[in-house]
Length: 443
Image (cartoon, rainbow, N blue to C red; front, top):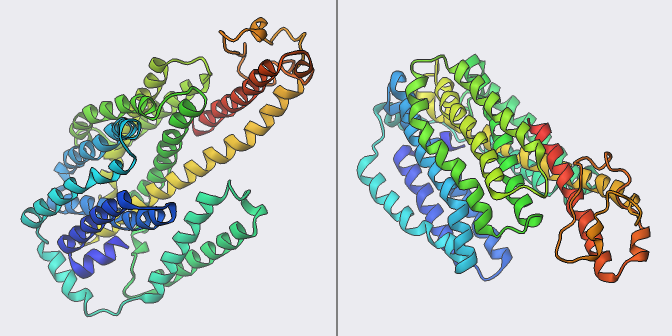
């Protein structure tokens, strides 16, 4: 929808409106007195932030000629990566030492600076001025707006609450799924037959653009899925603080930051298909290494895994964005960037939902295998069961491999403190094994 708003109101006005809404809602999030109010302001923050990425990429694509777009997207990618690279560490430090409210307050000065710079430096190009005048003479497709808003909103509810509500065992998830499918199918049919569509789906006839959307969907699922998995595992199972878990992710972000200029240089000299293939192979190798995930990993190992993955991501972001604009007219740049960002965010929702669901389901299975085989004479149970100075550690990864690991007999033969430690042992390893499995699936 950002493309439609940009064509109707112009890049500059729409972009500044998004920045203003994002900044104001960030400040209000910090002032929120309750969870319900915080969620409301977060929704407003998401509405404002949702239009920023597509507008920025469209402005870059229109400003630079095709031969220079690779480097332009690389420099833009450096700025985009810097925030998530420093965000987890900075956010964890703020949360641990001050208050979570300051996570939102720090957005305010940067938002005001962005408004000031945009007002003086960004101007609508001639074709955008022409498109703005023409679009105001066209009727507003309110039906299309309602359909796309309903479809995507219902789909996001399904992804966010699916695992919590046990997916299609819940009538709520079933209803939202039906509503989402019906709305999105109706929207697709309407837009393909509309003279003035909100979203020009005919652009997908361009093979470069269609492939770019599929690749961006895969990239979003892999990136966001692992970004959620790693800190969650480190904090819940390894006892890391929010700041320490953020420090595991940050070096990978800074590695992408350093590699972006090199990728921008290569993208105009090397076939983008080779760069994308190298990127996915690198990410696949990094995820394969993560299948060695255990409760005994140290900070250095977790950080290296993230760096391996980040090295591959640098070869994906710039080439995918570059080839998406090949063969598309300048006036369609808003539509191209909007669809690409939609695919990335949709892939992220799919990746996060898949990871959380599969871990929860497999965790139950592995806990059953472990708890079923708990007995005092089992050689896989550590001999330090009665000592508090050593943690329990499994000798092998797969719960089936030590299917003689845990059974309820030991609960009858040990003290209450030891029984609690054994139960914690079951929970920890019951989580670690499916987490290892999910990285194999993403690989």
